[in-house]
Length: 183
Image (cartoon, rainbow, N blue to C red):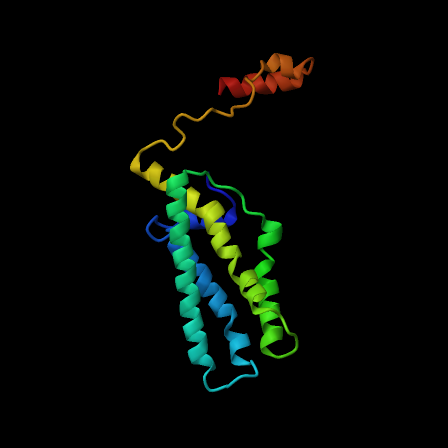
C-alpha cells in the first residue's frame, strides 16, 4: 500500500499537500532547477536567459500540475490500483534529457528538441499516473473511513502448517516455538 521509498516520503505528507497535481508541479520545479545551467550558459542572448528560464519553468510546472490533475481524474474514473513504474527506464531519462539539452544548447550536438523534452518530462507525470495518483486515491478512501479493498479476493498465503510438521525432528526448533507461543 505504501509503495517504494519515494511514495513513502509522499505518504508522510498531509493529503492536501501530496495531491497528485502538487507532486507533478514539484517534479516540474525540480526539472526547472536542473535547467538553470543550460539556460545560463547557452550560446544565445545572455541578457534574456533569466526571463526565458522563468517563463519555461512556469510552463513546466503548470504542465506537470495539469498532467497530475488529469491523472487523478482518470484514476478516479477507472479505479485502477497502483502499478510500480519501470524504474530502470524512468530514473535515467531526465539525466539523459538534461545531457542532450546541454549539448544542444551549447551547439555541441544537434538533438531533436521533442526527444529532449520527452526525456525530461515523461518520468514525473508517468510516475504520478502509474503509482502516486492511484495510491493517493486509496489513502483518501482510508482517511474517509471506507475500505478501498472491499469485494476483492484475499491473496493470503496457504494456511500455516503446524509447527511440529514444519520442524520435523528438530527438538531445538520446537522448544523455541513453544517458548515463543507461551509468551
